[in-house]
Image 1 (spheres, rainbow, N blue to C red):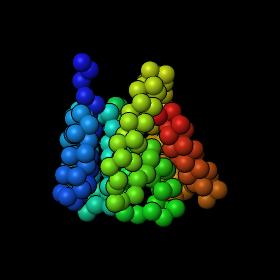
Image 2 (image 1 turned 180 degrees about the vertical axis):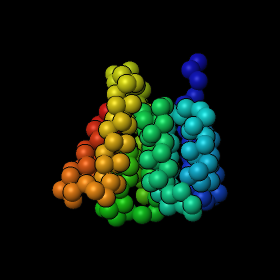
Image 3 (image 1 turned 120 degrees about the vertical axis):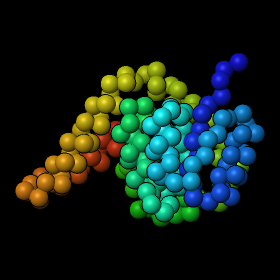
Length: 179
């Protein structure tokens, strides 16, 4: 029998953590929980996960910031991140994708919808991991880091800073397509 998929659930609400852990645990997934973006980053730094379910708004490090940092980790670049959030506006959805998120589910979370989405993303991730060489993620991260440092340079003309931001957005979209 195959080992169960490892899923990290990150939310500052212990009720949401318990609910999602219960739903996914009943489906045979190995579920680890974290109550903050900082804790999630520490966990992903120390062990690989097959999927991360992340609240977008948490005290301290937001889910958006945690996702950005997770995607910079060697094994984090290919890890699908799904945002679970009460926010359902277009800008939040776009921000989730810009920081490397792969999907966006609005709370309250329905059991069936959660299970279907998790299964689909895990299936896609397993296909992608065999199709995309690991070096591709590292190259994408170099482009992201380089364009971020360029955009932050106050000496850079505004037009080039805007191009650097566009490059980061294009890389986020490419990362989404590759994972």
